[in-house]
Length: 485
Image (cartoon, rainbow, N blue to C red; front, side, top):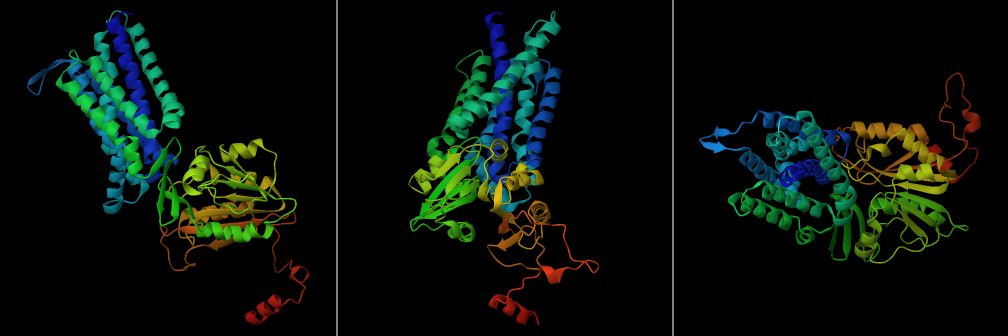
């Protein structure tokens, strides 16, 4: 292939990379505001695929000629498309600008995350993807028509190669190693590079505009601006922020308050509650108990326990270093081990059983891992409990089962963990409040007994309550009897 042909195929590769990378970045950057469920992800995917198809069609229909009073060549159309796409993507992918957009909508518009995602996609994704989708059919004008099948095959090959590189490099390399903000910056450098590749003159109004937009993107997505927003790390999984005020430090994962720790060792109320119920009674166990914490957060659970053995699970491998440096401000004790692996993969791959399993993976009402709310996952949890072992779970739910999620997650838990207790951390049960948006920390506690029988009930026909009821004469039992009279 000659040099001009190589340049054309390089443009095709870069276009494929940019579109796929922009899609992944849009999904990642919107997580703090709309979550990561399949419904919101599907909206973003749809907002890429359909405009891409329409762009292919529109690009194929373009013919050089006079448009709006001026002669427009293929090169002009390509450069104009990319410049407009850069402007839209600058607002849609740069976290500070995107954050301002969502905060404005949350304050003045819809709070429904489906509508929020749709508004975002329509404003910031549809137009740039439609314009970038025209690249391939427009570029095809520069190839000879005598070997159409061969040229078409090469074009599709290099476009798919670019998409492949966008999928692999954006997530496994750029986001993981350099951060999401620098992944966004690279995308704009590549878009500016496309302008330089396509322009006849390297110094022109178009190249100057592309350079300016790229420089703005680099500035807005710089580590300095991230620091102003208290962002410590912005990787594949989380936008991690740490704030400190008057000796109180808070760790935020995707805008949800994940952990709190103070100079006098205070933690979130629900952590204190679960520790009082589960950790304090076994603090000096001999031999030590085995404890599994799913959702490491800031590693505050069991902070004062240097006796029992802890396994912390979380998919984000950066959490331990961040917690030790910014939240706890000291290393984890030797009895605590962090495993940066998905929870279900860990449970499927280990035969270890635990005396306590604490699930703390539900960050607010947005970030709910769909694969960690199923009966199959809870069965995995139960299979790894020792007889007499305890399961504890912190879930953001409606205190009085007003929302469908609150009812369904309760039903799902009880289908696996019978005789489950439910404790409200903030507020009380309000029988007449049917607002599903009122949520709080709900703690579930369960102790595994091989003798449990969830199908055993009392009926008029078969009533053995006189065999089953306690026979002791404790003060508590007597008090209950008097209150019931």
